Image (cartoon, rainbow, N blue to C red; front, top):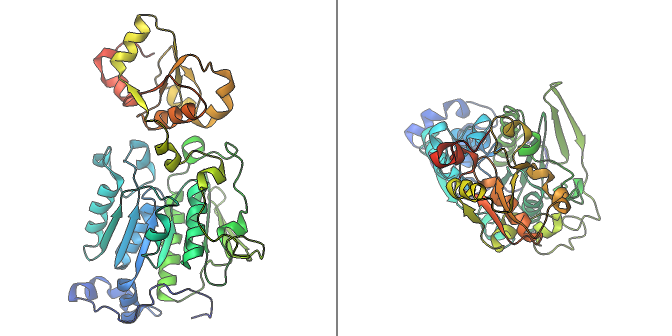
Length: 395
């Protein structure tokens, strides 16, 4: 050990024995200095929670399962979309439309049937975070939005749990370990979230498919070191990766004595992180009125009879270039907040996207902005193309 603060990950009083199959399976670990039999038993005794079963959660979960971490928790409430498959290797083509937790369970148990999986089909919120994260030794942040990152950070600080952070965007990635006993937290690095709409997400700006694999593998490595209490972790450092130049560099991060979470400790409970970040996150979205859907047949009929309504396509330009409804207006989801003043709140609005997920998010945004007659195209352009009733309406 290097004397660095590793927290208490995996510090269980009675280490579990390994079966004959486990001794064979982990043989390359058992001969490895810094792991050995006791280290492998520490891994088996450890409990790790991965928030998000997507791009970062996929490689992290796969490698932690293969390494023999005894209990893996996964938090996710999303379904597999074909656009996920470019980078989310927990899921395959046959899993499209399935809950991500189901495909993740099947894949991880195939990797290692000795791992105990705890699946949490929910969004992480201020109401459930402390109870949920409190069950685990190490928390892996595999999320892609600021409100959940601040939520994970604050919960980890309050609970005294190490937070293994990762983020990716386009060709760049970052990784660190926050909320250790003496190290800084995420708020020390980013005291305030960026203004809403200033930073694109991966759906809007894209991400190189292999980059989450690179960052997620680093997160898995950091989690293993925390459990094994060996090596030098990224606590107090931010690792930045430029995949285009293939350059790795790290900068030192120190604890901010004025940080409300880990400095002054004035933050004593979780807050409303959707409000803090100025966005409508999952918790806010579920509190809004349910999104009404319209079928492709009904939409085509409304257009054919000359009903007065707007159709907004919230896909990206490259998606719309492949196929689109000729009488729709293209406003990518990331640009929608800035385009609200160009829309007539007195007119009915139908929102469309590829599969119906983004259009539902856009419909909720419009509802929150005071639009009342908002519907989402059920199944999106995928269903529009399939349904014979919509034939001829797309150009």
